[in-house]
Image 1 (tube, rainbow, N blue to C red):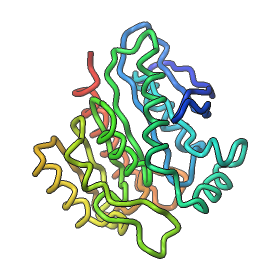
Image 2 (tube, rainbow, N blue to C red; image 1 turned 90 degrees about the horizontal axis):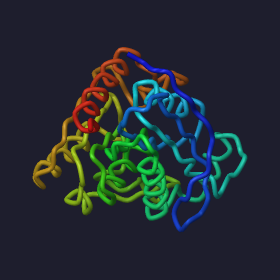
Image 3 (spheres, rainbow, N blue to C red; image 1 turned 90 degrees about the vertical axis):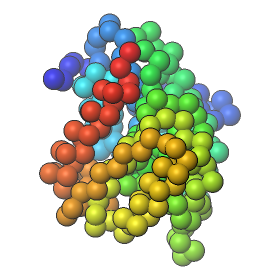
Image 4 (tube, helix red, strand yellow; image 1 turned 180 degrees about the vertical axis):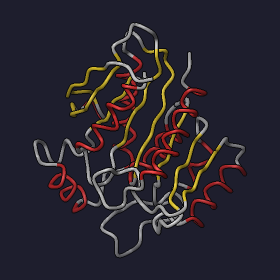
Length: 247
């Protein structure tokens, strides 16, 4: 059952105390609820990601999406901002962790926060969700088809992303992975390797791979959208969060 919500653009303190833009959505309730940090995909801080942020609020969670491209591309369209970030090799990992920490602190400071927090990311944000959960204290994490978790970015790629294998032993919380069987970045084999490493480290990891789905199957604005896979995956998210974000 969905609830009424309100959503607005705000500024939060990100890495190094920098003021960065963020999109904050909350359910209109006085009940204490969990929170979700949403990490946008490589195409940027766009309307599709803001809709996902509102969806979490409509389902009873505080939700915030920091604009990771705020510094390089203030006021730019999401496409132009993404192009600017891509030209710079992507968001540096250290800064990403600082921005997510700022978003998490903002959620914990809300009067109706129950202090339980999750992080979720899509595409490059999936990798960044894993990185965040290995670097910061969270109660749950979701990786939606994040590449470069167990491999470096290809040499011909404009990105500087490196493997996170050395960090997986530090995963702070249970993690859910949602993948497409037809994806090539990450491949099913790479996802299986991540699962192997996490289980080797004694971490709680649950993965679901959807047949007939490739990369970005959640994205309603792209040809890659697969409604059946997305519906099933959303169901897994709601179950996972109900388990780990309840007071």
